Image: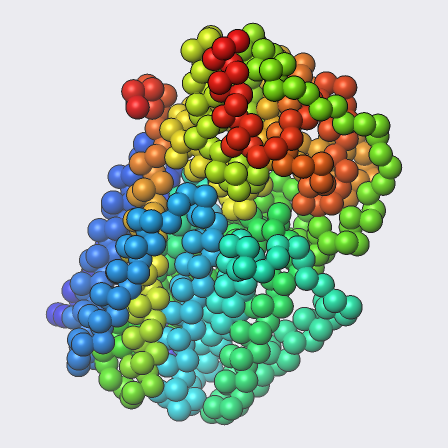
Length: 100
Length: 458
């Protein structure tokens, strides 16, 4: 990794950290569980790294590790988003909840 | 051209992730936000599939298929009461994936990495490994596979610190003199062991903090992966996840008035702290179901205070039934939710939402506390430490200063409890001995079902 790449990566990291702080502090305690499963699903983006490792065929070990990593991250992405959706659908305002 | 397309898909994915999390500020905008995030994820995956280094799709597609099936099954069938376990498991999966990608990168280069890449890779693999085993142990504790009380032994903290120091020592050595495979795998192995040791001394009641912390580590491991692969969407998503977990763990610690160090190394709830609690305050008053039913039926305002006992008894639906019956009689019903009630942040809110309780009836600690003096009956369901008045009144108490739900200020308190035993912290709860308090022993679900019937006939 060149120094320029590192510096720009650090910029991205620092800005994402600030942004994350601003965005996350506005989430009410009501939604803390869905928040956790949503961020989990989002950080399943490590899937993109796993995909390249599994498909590039650097060597057999890498392919196997990559395959396991793809399974793990996909589970997180799919499971995380499905559960978050399911939870969020349950949060209802009073008027709507009354009808059930 | 291809590279630009991939980078563009990552950029858009990052933007959608941020918008998705921004939506989480309100239940109404949250659903739309999540759809954006899902779309962003899809784009990033499609973009990645065009990566020029990919030569075969067999393993990728197989992995995607297996992961989707497992993820979908978990997503659809895991009950809301088991949400903490599922979350712990997904932290383990995420962290394990990060660790594996790191190990694979190291192996591919034969260990000969530049200083910067090696530093990032070390972080990635160490955080990934310790989060994997730590989360698996947290899962086992939450699932009841191993007991939830802290596991401690003499010299535990010193041993853990020594192990951590050795692990970091190897890491630093590898950064300066890269290339040693055996040392690298020793480091990975030690990190796996350290994860277990880190969670061992932590009791179930402190799980909200641990869950948040592991969430944070899993995110940071992803971010480190981003540094290794020079992939910015990974850095952004990982950092958002890492910070989210970090903020949550701080909020959880604040809600218990304890420091992070105390939670991690204090072995709270073990025999040692239990011994600190002392004298009896008199006797507990057991009350009859009919009396309580009458009190509830003729009350103006009732506040339910749920704790982890609500989840174990799966009583959330019956609570809602009782609330329905009461509301039909003109009683105002509210719910007071302590931030650390349950086993993960927001656990109680999700359970009650599942039972169709509108979120407008769920009140946070600061909102509900001023309302207790005007509350006729406060019903405590399977909560203990979060309503312990000692935290407010007794500076010598191990939980002194922890913000509590001040149910003892209401006109009458009913405590639904499985037995006469102490709460998780092993502390005596003076609330149970107060004259305003009546105890109803038994399974919460069963008791509440009978209360519903009794109120209907009152």
